[in-house]
Amino acid sequence: MPIAVVYKFLDDSGTYLAALITYYSFVSIFPLLLLLVTMLGYVLHGNDQLQQAILHSALREFPIIGDQIGQNVRSLHGSVAGVIVGALGGLYGGLGVANAGQYASNTIWAVPHTRRPNVFAQYGRSLALLLIVGIGLIATTGLAGLTTAQRPLPGLIGSGMDLLIRVGATAVAAAINTGLFLLAFRALVARHVTVRQLLAGAVAAGVLWQALQELGTFYVEHELRGVSATYGLFGIVLGLLAWIYLGALLFLLCSEINVVRVQRLWPRSLPTLFTDNVRLTGGDRRAYRGYATAEQRKGFETINVEFDEPDPSRDRSQ
Image 1 (spheres, rainbow, N blue to C red):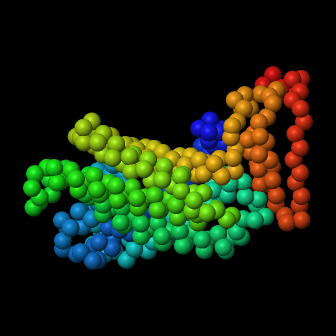
Image 2: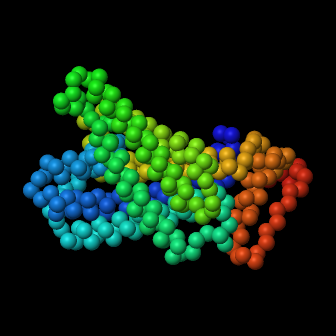
């Protein structure tokens, strides 16, 4: 099954789908940060300490380069232009991320083009998804402050209780992440899927995403403390792109797990990626049939898929 997941990911050009999601995510990050610091300037004017505390809590979602971003972001103290630019830029990038996620999910699930939502329904679904994910990120951002705290929490007896709270907060954050991934997997695909069909991939994504955050924070605290800042702007840009791309790959691979399980696209014949001189398994045939029928553009278009016996003379690897 792991081989089938990897083969399906490569057949779907998963690296390019991840790059598409990464682009719109990167475009949305800085406008949203601009909107955040500007709104903080309105609401918490005169309380710079609390503004920075909230900002750094939000940046804990990016443990590798969050500190560098925080050092280069300053409050605009209630700028109207900052609100407008941040809202428009964040909306453009956010809708782009959601639309790219819909395209990727429909591609992975081999949903025929004729059954995919039109442009109006697509943007409506994207707006709803942004609202749901935004609420969830607020919750996970708050919990991130507990899981990555460097000092024992005041009022607690000993470090054992502090460790217990961190472990508990990490478990709750992973559960919330799992719920967010479950909602995303369900909302992004234009076909009927049940919670049971999506649960395995959502759990894997939620746990792995939390593990990435914990590992990233550990790496920063023990390896990059006082060093990462020397990379400056290039470190911020490249680190942010790498982090988002890694998250996109995680999302797509866990979505592929669901598809391979539900549609039984395994086992796969090992040589299928390299040669035409291969006898296809049942999983191979179901996968290739799905790739073809997904290209249906009109409801009155019919696509039939047949497989001949392998012919060594037509081996594409030669």
